Image (cartoon, rainbow, N blue to C red; front, side, top):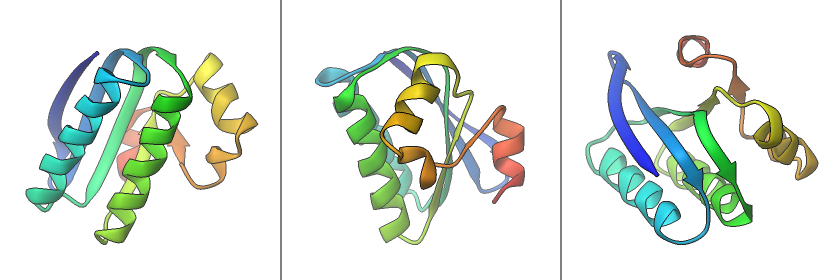
Length: 112
């Protein structure tokens, strides 16, 4: 999995993920990216899942963990580009009740 970090608007960071987000190396990459954002005091983060090809229970768990860590640090997390299987998984597990998702990163940014 590749992670590209960029600032969409002042104070709003986007993590663009591409490839599979599954248990193991990919989850560790996401954790390290969030560690850096929190260290750098970036408290409004959007995770763009539009290029994620697979999400397993480990990947979903890591997203929930990142949401929790961001909230504890006083920040907020939004998802963008959630479609198909990933949208179904969020609904099936009821994670969509607290992991708010938007069609685009711009719409997610406007929700902060």
